[in-house]
Amino acid sequence: MPIEIVCKIKFADEDGNQKEKEEGERESLIGDDIPVVDRDLAGFARTSTLHGLRHIFKTGRLGIRQSLWALAFLASLLFFLYQAAKCALFYLEHPHVTAVDEEVMGEMIFPAVTICNINRFRHSALTDADIFHLANLTGLPPKDRDGHRPVDLMYPDPDMLDIVNRTGHQLAEMLKSCNFSGDNCTAHNFSVVYTRYGKCYTFNADKEHPKVTRQGGMGNGLEIMLDIQQEEYLPIWRETNETSFEAGIRVQIHSQDEPPYIHQLGFGVSPGFQTFVSCQEQRLTYLPQPWGNCRASMPREQFLPGYSTYSISACRLQCEKEAVLRKCNCRMVHMPGNETICSPNLYIACADHALDSVADDTSDKCTCSTPCNLTRYGKEISMVRIPNKGSATYLARKYNKDASYIRENFLVLDIFFEALNYETIEQKKAYDLASLLGDIGGQMGLFIGASFLTILEILDYLYELIRNKVNRVFRRKSSPVKKPTENISTLVMDDLKDQSSIEVRGRHPEGAYATTMLPNHHRHYTHHGVFEDFAC
Image: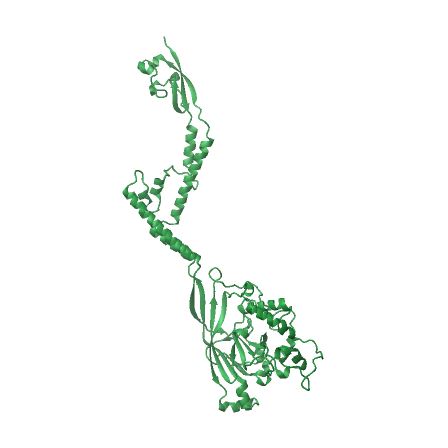
């Protein structure tokens, strides 16, 4: 008679977890399905392009060969980091070099030439009112027809611009001859400009239509003969800030883009001499911060009225004008603008003191940076005495003067280009970003055999390592507790007749039965998972 035995079999359901694990391992950095590979450190070292790693990270015990490779790799890495740090520090210093070159031209723009008579006011042009108002400037006492006029009589309010324009030396009277590159020129080729010397004149000031020269050397530039009119110089009764003991003219050679700053940047020319000025144009290019400290001109910037380009001269004039305006509520004649012009009394009482304070101020209120693009003219000056004994008589007869007057008042100024070329002086970056990356890349390839793609490999490995750890943590937190499934099967004694009595009595440890001992429910069963336990 057959005997039925009821048995319970436990299976753990791990199919879902196994599926999730396989799907997670198939994900890559770029989202493509790739075969699962070994991503431990040894596996990364075998596939990395970084030299030496494959000899260091191997499976098994650490040997002498691996230790030596590790020391060599660390030494190379340290030396690379040292060299890379040196390159980076040198780059952060922002060094620059200066390159000098020379360019030859077929024609060149002639510079602007500003000339001023050192004497500001002609004595014969001063009226009694002018002398009265300019007493503090000139040191001359007020006078009338009899020599002096009582100071209690009042004159009309003075107009400083009218006084300077009317009493200054007139170019039409000073200019005796003018020639530019073989063509005659007149006073109409000069424009009036006001400086600290009063009324001055600039040749070739029009930057829209500048004059050009097509040949270098003497006779191919500007040649003028001037009469400085020493008989018109003011007598000195007492010394003032404006008292001058010199006789002659001041000359400044500058570009059309900058105003004249002749009282500081000009040079003197004496009467009785012919002065030769050989020029060479220099075009300077400076670097802005952090490599240099230049200031670039902004598009459509009107830094100073009449001058659209930033220059040191324009900056100084603007600073001086603002200082005088703050202190005196007016401007001086030579300062461009539309503000009220200071009276002669304010010139001495206020304006001159304001200019002195600007010169003595060491703060950064009036710091004029060097423009990033600058044109200047190098000069070589030589002179010969004129006139000689033979020409003195001729010139005296020609201009209806005596020979001594010619020697004391006449001068000739000859300005020309030495050659039709210009010198470029340019600041350049000595070490830019491309040089830094090139040096670091070279050091990296030399010492550790790495490149930019090697860095991407390391980042990809770190990404996968972190991602796997994060996924493992989240799976551990979110996965439910495994609930074993229970199945009840019927075991017929006929099925066990071939087994030994020891197997039938269940002396096997729980869960360690042979596969032949597993029951068969109607000779077949469905797989439920991993076999966990079997009990009857």
